[in-house]
Image (cartoon, rainbow, N blue to C red; front, side, top):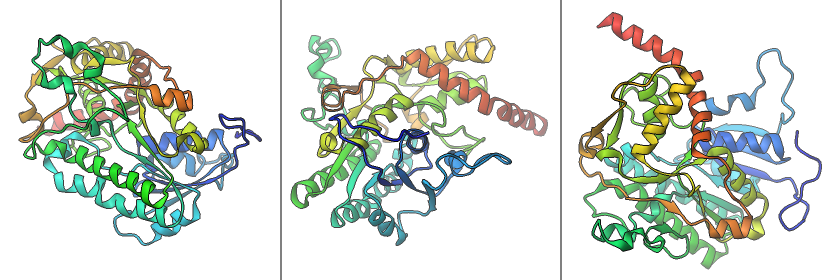
Amino acid sequence: MATAARLDLDGNLIDPITICMIGAGGFIGSHLCEKLMAETPHTVLAVDVYSDKIKHLLEPPSGEKAHAWAGRIQFHRLNIKNDSRLEGLIKMSDLTINLAAICTPADYNTRPLDTIYSNFIDALPVVRYCSENGKRLIHFSTCEVYGKTIGSFLPKDHPLRKEPEFYVLKEDVSPCIFGSIEKQRWSYACAKQLIERLIYAEGAENGLEFTIVRPFNWIGPRMDFIPGVDGPSEGVPRVLACFSNNLLRREPLKLVDGGQSQRTFVYIKDAIEAILLMIENPGRANGQIFNVGNPNNEVTVKQLAELMTEVYSKVSGEPPLEDPTVDVSSKVFYGEGYDDSDKRIPDMTIINTRLGWIPKTSLHDLLESTLTYQHKTYSEAIKREMAKLSTTS
């Protein structure tokens, strides 16, 4: 139940607002909708092509009474590429949150045009409608806009590579360094950076009130899909879902180029707390770019695979494989044109100073929560699928 009176960080009463959430049916959107329904008085116009991940919010289970938030969330099934209703929904709202994107690394090489169109061209009308109608915008970008670290261009044994100023990523200081044009893996990062620059320019020239969010590997239940179960069999989701798929099928986890890239991971419920602070504290969030990650949860992808193997064994009660990982080249796994950043470690000074946000959940705990969900949700379906395949082969 939402409380009757809620205060922002400066002690002011928070008034109920209407939020147009584009991409509400996805991983982040579903968790944000849950938070808004359970803890706030705000209304959400949920815009997406699919509603599976928010179905539990839209209608109560059969035979049960209506949700306490009935009437505060409305689903609008539309594709923002070509639907004239979008501007009307933005006009009806106080705030627009744009989560829509193609954000799966396997697509950056194989679908670079779709990636660029989805993350830049399709976002243009959203920015324009917000600017022309005087509506606030929270736009979800990506930590990939930083590209490669300065330190990655130094020799591998250079002592400066260990100095934070050569790898920690700061919103207002760090440059955005990408690979060559033939490395189409950077199509996503370039499109996201360009829409950031356009939003920033709209703010400077036309007074658009905006906040840009740069997520650093948000992890939790309902992330991505499991190939062949609730996604295409040939699909390649992001690393956590890829590893989960391997674990569920009792296959070795594939380490691209040895899994030496370093990443940080933050629990989705911690990250959603940060977004709620941005929503309800516009005076502190407007005009800002925020890293949202957890630098305390830093591991190599290989270490992530080892920890996931250990945690999943505990969750499932199944012993790990004798050889739990296997190396695969990026060319084989992603195709020609793949490239990667060496580290993605966020500086948290701005979000901590302006919003007082600090992530709480350890990597082990977030993996245990997520893998418990994955096992409960998918293990039986995968067993049935594998049994069917064995009888037909």
